Image 1 (cartoon, rainbow, N blue to C red):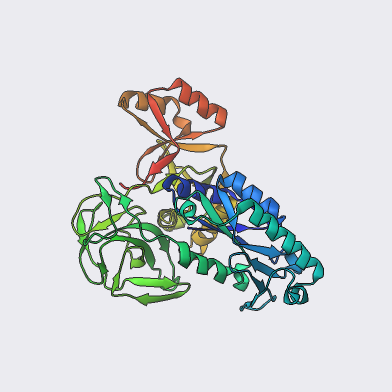
Image 2: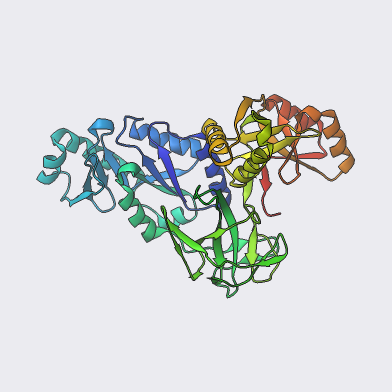
Length: 421
């Protein structure tokens, strides 16, 4: 996984959520600190903030020379080379230097900046030492790179390191057993869905990660949740905006599949074996808004848009228990703006988003169905259902949530909902 951190805003809410998934699965992670060509936070303050907020040890692999309008490039600590930044250029100039007293370094960045980067790198090497690849593979240490993605700067150094140290596909847990990537039979799961990837064609793409065996074009596979066979005549591989039809794919590959509404995130495809891949959680959102339809003539379009856009996994859709109020839950304000814009542009549905006074959503389960029903009846104003019909408690504050947890020991409050059903 590559985590992109904005040097201006630092660690944001959605990054914390993603890191929770990464930590839960002990997935190796690389951090790319972006927008170094803009005025942002102090680079050492950023490192400290990331370690504290995401609870992971960092290991800088490159380090910036200034930032904002004075950004001159990065020093590649691993390769002991200077990578120079030219505003507006899409190519890098990389120079091998012989130590920090090399006249070439002083010539390119100036005597003052050469002295500063020397001091910075010596401090980093003294504190962090050499990168331990085993610590990276176990998810305990994250290599860090600095750059400007929009200028394609600093990205090459990150990708070179990714190729050098990233792990091969790993075994994955399922509801029945562990699946090894070297197994002969194919299996994989849907981890992302994108509606209207090409607005002209109103297509919907489900992204499949191959976990074992070989995926082949035009071959029938079992859609485990639906219990039916499916095949794909035009599976795609994607690189930026370019897509190409592929004949086969192997563990670790990502395949784009045209979807007519058959897939959900977490769905499993196999060659006949019946299991679901686990460890694909849906996390509790932190901001909630009621969706109000501004044009009753577009009700069907709104319903379709809400379902398809929340199928993508960037937001969650709840329906008030015993009512029809539609509630969207997200981890950031920007996601609401994106959903509102896409509902209008892609589905012709104009909506108003009204903020709701909820703090967190918790999925409810209990071994005693009656107690769960009684709780739902007493707390009806705070009860909703997710798209799959699971009962959810919408807490108004941390105090209310803790009180309900204490007062209802027979009811389990879950902050994630496992996706494999």
